[in-house]
Length: 188
Image (tube, rainbow, N blue to C red; front, top):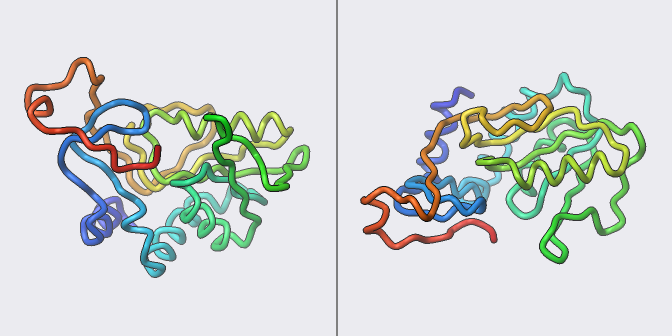
């Protein structure tokens, strides 16, 4: 799939929104990728998961890990497409942790999969958890890289869409966004 094909999927599903949005990072933006809207249809999940899995197959990961909530659906599908194990990290007391009896073996090759990356904070937390458990991070795969490659995670990175979407500090908003009420449609 080309980037334009993926953007078309998001538009067709109503998952590419225009307005004034507060991102998980705290930044504000005129556009928002509501991946959950695209990922509610299993044929779309399968198509996007296959495209992402094809990009990372050569890494040889034996496990996929995703941060909950956003990365769960696409992470599980990428793992299914690769025929490997899937686990996730989730929030506990405001930070991501490995729970539910999930274990990472020393030296285990792990692929981190996320839906959207703006600054990469949750992905970095996930990478840190893998490393704290002596796992090896083979790479990071995401459906949408909002940073256009500027989020540097220190491992190979792969995305279906890579765009530079303007994001603004809440204390330095352009005039047009100041006139529109901000909404926070993503996970908290």
